[in-house]
Length: 143
Image (cartoon, rainbow, N blue to C red; front, side):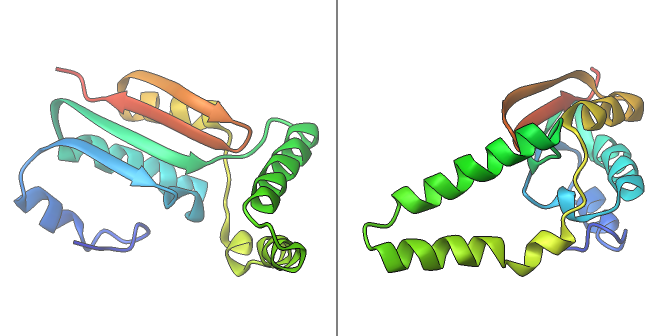
């Protein structure tokens, strides 16, 4: 099933499938406005069965420009090590800096998003992993 996270036309299909044990999102929610993120988290809680978990693997905003620059260095250094050929390395890094999807990023700090999950009713909310702008955070629907 697919749907637009900014719309609700897919909600009935999810409800028809019954409550979910787990919902996982991977690098998608950071493209929608913060107000819609908050509403989506509440929607997702509704789709879970008691004890069900929501896991979000996401691109989040950095805590400061210092960390944002460190992330950019780490990421571009990682790209560079993947290519033995200097021209291919240069092309890959240029493609990263000129990618069109960067303009669609609507990043929020991970601690703020964890607060939104708690506000929506999730419990046991935590960030399990974070490296600069990559985070894995989750919450559970109360039993």
